Length: 152
View 1 (spheres, rainbow, N blue to C red):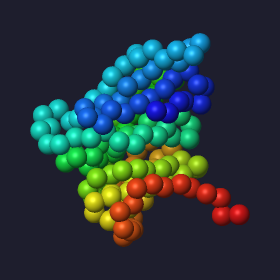
View 2 (spheres, one colour):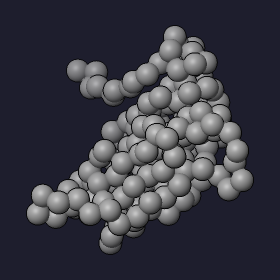
View 3 (tube, rainbow, N blue to C red):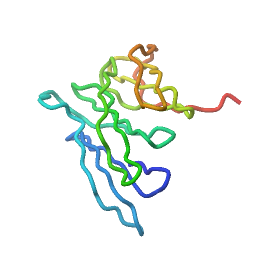
View 4 (cartoon, rainbow, N blue to C red):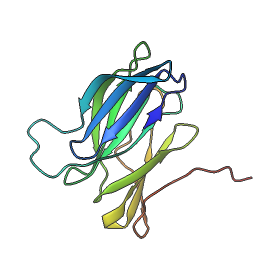
């Protein structure tokens, strides 16, 4: 579960039905306000909701859908109520995307594919949330987590 920067909305993925749940947070209470499926209409393979992160500006939310889908699902965040609108699905170009990270500038997104020993670095447009179609591949054994740190 993650909270937006205002602390008014929270987001949670569900692994078994590959959904994102949206909550309002007020006075120590969470109230569910929306459920959004990550599954493409007509998809019949294995699914598995995984990691989720907001863009640094809070305007976009991304979540991984593992199983046979192996994709990042991008959503626009409505600043008024925290609700999500599906934008696009992006293949992670590997199997079992466990975790991903967005760099602090919002210009890069890296996703690790645990079962295909690969990570892909996508250029990201901070204005639209779009991921470039030509990511750079890094061969790495079973990646499961990423953190961006300052070089100093």
